[in-house]
Length: 429
Image (cartoon, rainbow, N blue to C red; front, side, top):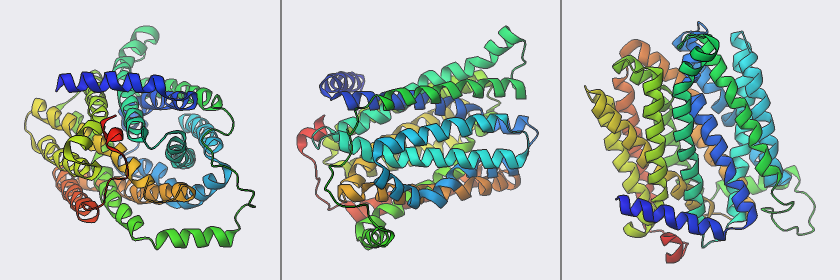
């Protein structure tokens, strides 16, 4: 296994050297975003609770950012198709950065919810435009490898972010006399990641004008009627719903459990901030290595669908180990395994999905998939908070496992006979 990981890293480095400048610049973004998400994800729940809010409000707060995606995914998807990918990514980052700063300055519940919703607008615009932009920047031969590398960089950056984040409470105590596990400590930590968001603007702004954009055809911008006609045409495609439903099931299950993994480990095993930082750091490292193996797994198993089914089914087993282990060590192994195998499937699903429609429809399709994913993330965190208060974490892990199984079975039933649209060389990249 170590030899395969080492070979995958070496191949990835050699591949990067051959990518054009725009791809290299874009790949800097997941590094910065990975650190942002790692640190924010580690302490967001604790920050809200340290403000004196209860778990019911925490559930609503966790749902506000994806709620923006649920409501605005389609109009923002159409907007990014019309604005262009690069401009949409850049604007989304600006909105995200400054609404996040406003969130940290908020003191009331309504202020927190509003700023988190606006943060979701920025995130949605970025994520909807980013995948079609990277699709446009890559070739059919290197697309799977680039998508895998993008996810791997995001995960490996999370290693650094989680580890540094876990140590920050001690640094704040040493430098400023701020006690760990307090509101002041968590606020100071979260404020530092604002600067990471600002740094993401630099590589995107350096992508040459026009790179990643569709060629102009001389046609005027589409009217509202034409846009609606295009959406209706896309929704009539069977493959769109076949992509939508498995993604919906995964989103529902993940939203029940993933936002509260740090709380689960703390409440069940009394994990400290420092221990959580180490555990999440190692998880990101393992996930990054696993993601780099996605192209190899697709080749080994005969295609991306086979690899998708295998990785999701394996992650389900680790999920149940994590949720029902009486020992911290075994639960941590389940935690690491679930994250690694589930995230291994993501670049395979993204690349496969984008190739099922024409380039002009990719932004809209990505918004539809974001809608399916964020339906769960907008609704289920609040449901999870209620279940935790009444019954603990066990029903959450059981329900998540059932939803993961449903998603895996749907992917196999829908796509097991679909021929791979990429070359064998791409799968070995």
